[in-house]
Amino acid sequence: MKKNSISTAVLASLAGIAGIANISSAVNINPDGTGQALIYPYYTTNAGNQTLLSVVNTTNVGKAVKVRILEGRNSFEVLDFNLFLSPQDVYTAAIINLGGATSPASILSLDTSCTAPTFSSDGTSTASGIPFVSFRNFLYLNDTAGGTGLERTREGHLEMIEMATLSGALATGITHVNGTDVPRDCGVLGNGRLGSGEIVAANLGQPTGGLFGGAAVINIASGTYTNYSATALDAFWGAGESTYTDPDSVTPSLVDSSRQSLVFNNGRVVTSNWGNLAIDAANPLGQRIDAVSAVFMADTFFNEYTTLASNNEASEWVITFPTKRFYVNNLPVVIGAPAALRPFTNRYTGQACDPIGIASWNREEFSGSAGPVPFSPPAPGQVGPALCFETNVLTFNQTITNAANGTSSPSRIFGSVHARNINTPRISGAAGNNTQAGWTRIDLTGPTRQLRPSAEGHRWFGLPVAGFWAVSIENNNATPGVKGFYGGAYNHRNSRRCESGAAAPFGSCVTP
Image (cartoon, rainbow, N blue to C red; front, side):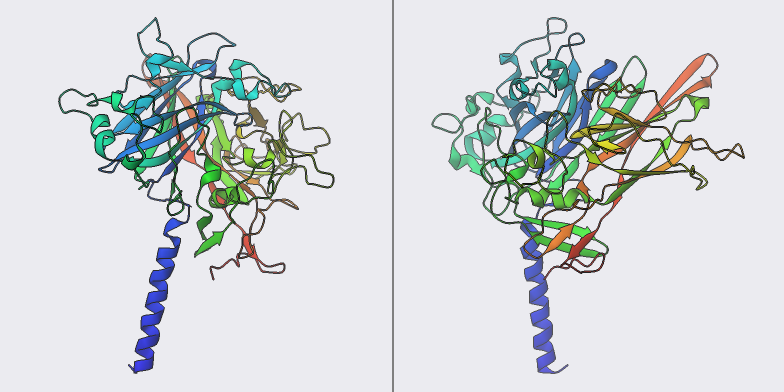
C-alpha cells in the first residue's frame, strides 16, 4: 500500500472514531434496554386494575432519579419524587385506587430504597399499614374543559430521569446493609434539597445510565396480567448538562435532553442537531424537545389484534405521545401562528386531536371494502378518526360510548376512559374471511405532520409515539371445571420517514 493510501486510511479511521465520539452524547432509544431515562407508556387504576412498577440500577454507583407521573389526557404532572438507588438496587411500587369512583390514584411501596420526600410523611394505609402517596390535581385545576376531578389521575404514563450519580456520604447512606435489607442512613439526604447538611453538590456526578424498568397492569378479579418493558433513552443528557433538582421541582423533564438525536433509519444512523433553546411560552419555536421527539417519530405504526368470540378475546392498543404536551400546551395566541407546534395539529383545549388513517387486514390478507368504521365523536370540524390525548387507548370491536367531553365508557382490559374503538368489518362470503383477528396499520402522516427541520435540514414525518398491544384470552376448558385466563403485551412496530432538503427523495437523511 502506498504511503498516501495509508495516510488516507488512517484519516478515515480517525474520522470514524471522531464520529463515534460525536454521537456519544446524542439521545437515542437503546435497543439493549438500558439508559439514563425511562418512558413507561401506561398506567391505570380504572376498573379494578392496579399497575406494578420496577426500576433497576445495573451499575456499581448510586443514582438520584426523578420519578414523574403524568395523567393521560394531557400529561399534567400529578406526582413526582426523588428516588435514590444504591448500586445494583431494584425499586418496586404499585399504583392503585384506594377509594371510590371519584378518588385519586395513589402510589404505595414497601421498598426500602431512599426517597425524598418519604412516603410515610404523606399518609399510611389504615388497612394494611403500607405507606402511600395520593396523586394531586393542582396543575389542571383550571382545565375545566378537560375536567378537574381527582379521578383524572387514575390513567396516564410515567417518566424516570437519572439526575446524578452519588459519591461520599450520600452514596454510603443510601446503600443497603447486608443482612438488614435497609439502607444505612436515608437521613443523610435530609429533605433531599441542595444545600448545607442535605444534598451536597460535591457528592453529585454525571449520570452514567444503566437503568432499566418495566410495569404490569394486573386485575385480580378478572385474572388478567399485562406486562411491558419501559423504553430506555440512552445519552439523554448532553455533556456536562445534567441537573439535580429538589423534590418539589417539576424539572428536569424531557425538554432538558441532549440537543442531538441519533436514530437508526433505513439502514443508516442519522444524527441530527436541534438548537439550543427549550420550548416555553416566551419561545414557542425552541427545538430542544425535538431531539427526544425525533427518536420516537413514526410515519406509520402497526400491530396485531384478536377479538375471537370463542375465547372471549379482547385487544387494546396503548398509544402514547410522550412529548406531545410540549407542542400543544400553553402556547401564546399569536395572529397567524399555527394552532400547535409541529408536528402536532391542534393546541390543547380540553383535548388536542390529530387525525389518523386506519387500515386493517385479517390473518389471510383480506380487508373490508369499506375499511374499518372510524370511531366517534370527532372533534368539531374534524372528519374521520383522530387521537386526542397524550395517552390513548384504542380498542377493537368493543362497545364504547363516547361523551361530548371526550371521555368514554371503560374499555374491557384497562378500563380506560380515553378509549376509542375500531369496529373491524365482517367480510361477506367465505366464513374464514372475517376480521375478528388480524393486524392494523395507523397512518400518522399529514400535510404538516413533520418535525421542524434540524440544523442539517432533516425532516422527520409523522408523530412521536410509544406503546403496545395488550391481549386477554379466556379458556373455558383449561381443565375440567377450571377457567384459564391469559394475557400478553407486544410493542408496536413502526416505519420511519426522514427527508433532507425541499426536494429530497424518501429516506434520504444522512449524517454529514
